[in-house]
Picture 1: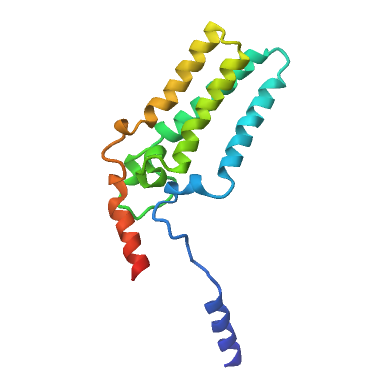
Picture 2 (picture 1 turned 60 degrees about the vertical axis):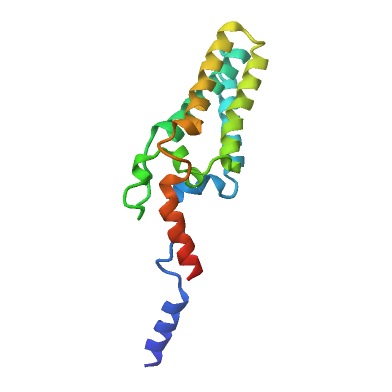
Length: 177
């Protein structure tokens, strides 16, 4: 009997099966601790790796860094739909891109501003270090527009935040009760 009570006590103290409180973790992942620093370090490491290739010139490396970054951002934020998590939102997230899911679709949050400004800063750096060469300038501008235009709220499927209105209200009810 003493052994059984000890087992019960241990099981009640463990947080086995306790999950996060997010209905869709995709909505808040870009606000997690260190994600912006990791993102900036990833771009920096990409640039250093490209600089280490001996036959690449500095202007070419800046343009490649910009184009590879923007291609990756386009694919992961604007082309791929759905979520890698099992979500209880009855399939609403599977029809949305990561950008549309970010911060429950609310516009002008700090993460959305960061991920809008970062390709612009990279574009300015690439333009400066390529000395505004026409070929590089056209490539960098097209690359920038390919990630900025999909971020416009007019191109999202519906009103800002309309996809997650029921989910946010459900969370608020659970918190209040």
